[in-house]
Amino acid sequence: MKITRELVAKLPKTDLHLHLGGSMRLETLIDLAKKDRVELPSFTVQGLRETVFKESYHTLEDYLKCFVYPGAVMQKPENLSRIAYELAVDNQNEGVRYIEVRFAPQRYAGGEMDLPQVLEAVNDGLNRARREFNSREVIVSGREPRFDYGIIACAMRYFTKESSMYFKGIFSVHAHSRHDRIFGLASFELTGAIVKARREKGIPVVAIDIAGREKGYPPIHHREAYMLARRNFLNKTVHAGEAYGPESIFQAITELGADRIGHGTSLFNPEAISDPAITDRQRYVDDLVRFIADRRVTIEVCLSSNMQTDPELHRLEDHPFRRMMSNRLSCTICTDNRTVSNTTVTDEVLKAVNAFNLSYAQLKSLVAYGFKRSFFPHNYRKKRAYVKQCMDYFEEVTADSI
Ligand SMILES: [Zn+2]
Image 1 (tube, rainbow, N blue to C red):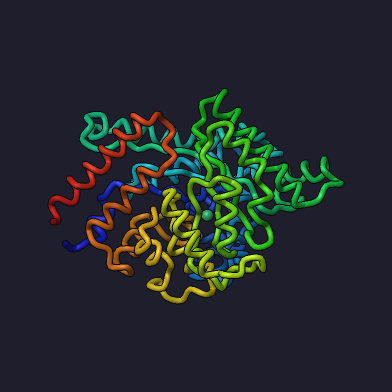
Image 2 (cartoon, helix red, strand yellow):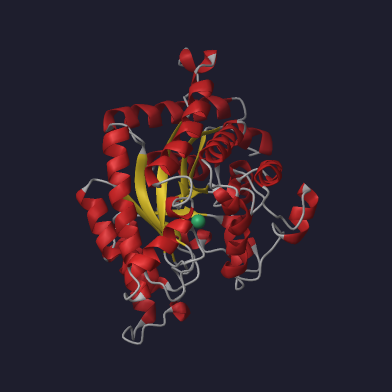
């Protein structure tokens, strides 16, 4: 069976690792920047592609700079709602039925909005796109699966006074605390806000995450926040093993109780271990891989993004996704940042199929993992029914091609 772009585009898909700011339409960035008088290096799509949102980046730090401009236009509720709405629509238009949108609410709070208002604004946009999509006849009649979403709130591993008005406030209140302690306090506070937004406003914040510079800013700083999340039945994911070694993944799982790992690209690399206490590095990696496989900790794989930020990766065929598959890890294909990485879910799935020569069965299980390992915001019975409906639809779509 030939797995074509047309077929992949029609398949029901998920994106569980999707940043709001890094996936904004460039036309919208330009439009909002003009409206809010935000200075951009260029006011054309092509100009922005040449100066900021490039084909490749030298380091993760370089890549993260792409978030500065979108961040500047995400300070108003109406802008956030529009960006979130368009992101959901872009996904719907390429067959994606379930997304988990992540962003760092504290980067947009402290000025016009407080934390709950940031969450509400994003939720309003996503909810509107969901409502519109699900009112289509094919959905109402049950012939096709509905569109749904969850929200993941990212705490920042690192920030400065300049990162946002909110962060400025945190630094002034904790003027005499160590910085790593302040990062932990901020994530703890964020978790408290999420719990409240879920409970009091019914906003489907399904999980907490930590994002931003990994090197030098270990998961352990956020232990208390993750404990609070656990006590409140929140799911947990962590960006880990993207710019630091396997011990970062280990910490994310053992200290923070991560249900999923974002990237995990350094997982199979014993050379990347820098902890001198780990003497038998290969054994450490083998044990960690077994541990992850056994517990079905899911890896959110972002192929294009990793190729752009990992200087060690030259060919997609060498991406550790191959070893993740051969070790039978639970993996799901994600975009990370649609605009910054200039990609879509269809592109990413197709890349995986072509570079790793995936069979129909492998593709099907990869797509199924996305639905099964999602942090679906409704009860388990509903989740099972939804996963079944999506996978039945998967078979229906592919039936003509077999
Ligand atoms: Zn990410």
